Length: 445
Image 1 (cartoon, rainbow, N blue to C red):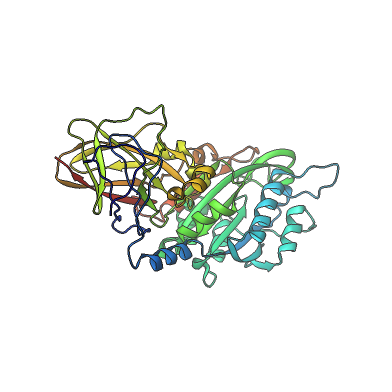
Image 2 (cartoon, helix red, strand yellow; image 1 turned 90 degrees about the vertical axis):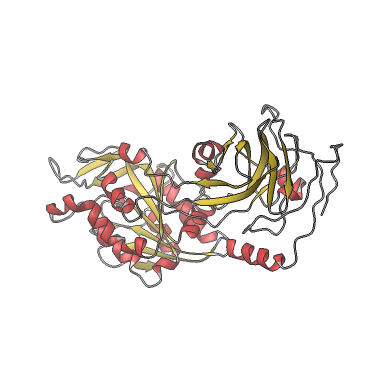
């Protein structure tokens, strides 16, 4: 079905409505030719039968989360939660974790929330108010604590634990009673989180430091079994474990004050809405191409033989963690592939769409980001262009925050790299992509 365009393009350069194979939306947005993008368009109605599919997709995307929060409350954690007052500001732990559990309690993204204290036995259910009191320092006696592998095992072996989001808050200091266990740390972690690999769950790790007051119990007991700290900063961590799409959504919508230190394992999202766009989106600093491109049937028809062909595409990345939605991260990690051809992501072309753009142009409403792609070679008559986000490996900050001797307090955790090695080994050698979208191309020779 043809559309009307509000600029004087030559007659041969037609635009037609089409559908992406396997796309989430029934109607694709259309492309302009010669590297220019008109500002006004009309589009065809969705194909018959697509409305129910689209509504089902939307319903699945916004399905409320079921969340259980676990706070390790042992002698080693008590220093993060001193009993404050008007003359004593809250620690970073109290501020961050207080905000996190409050957001979990009130967020509309969460349908059901439960709270637990991890002491020297199985996780103990408590009310939200009790957990908040602990974070505020309103508890006088802390438990001895449970060894790290046993704590994780107890959390993940609960009935239906693999169907919800488990949020684990701890300093993750591993000090086993049997010293020989130190040498098996990655294996012990891997065993304790066996449901992660068995049920294909995702693990997100967030690292933060906080002032600490009171008894600090290092993993390495020499020369001191414990030390008394008066405000020195030491690390703590928040682990988010659950089905990949739910972990991604919790990180994006609930953990709004997440720290910069983040690591994700096994994170995947549903195929995001993805389509070429016909609207004025190109950054004026980007030099446009002279190639011809138009939409036809189930893909794009283009001819890059004389000049490269540039076009914009929209992506709905709202389910990604906030840190992964940043243009710098996407520009560094997005991969564009075109068998029997050559395609690339134009530098400085990744950006989020503004609320004004989304509300002012309905054609942009389904998308959060726009990127600019260039096809400079297409040797075969047809091909499929792929845009994917490969899963990043363990980030560099993990090594920087690891130590083999934590007897002297510092912003490092004993064996953190070994702990996360155990997590990483729970997944395939090559991590699956976070998402992949495809666009059929036809060579208009």
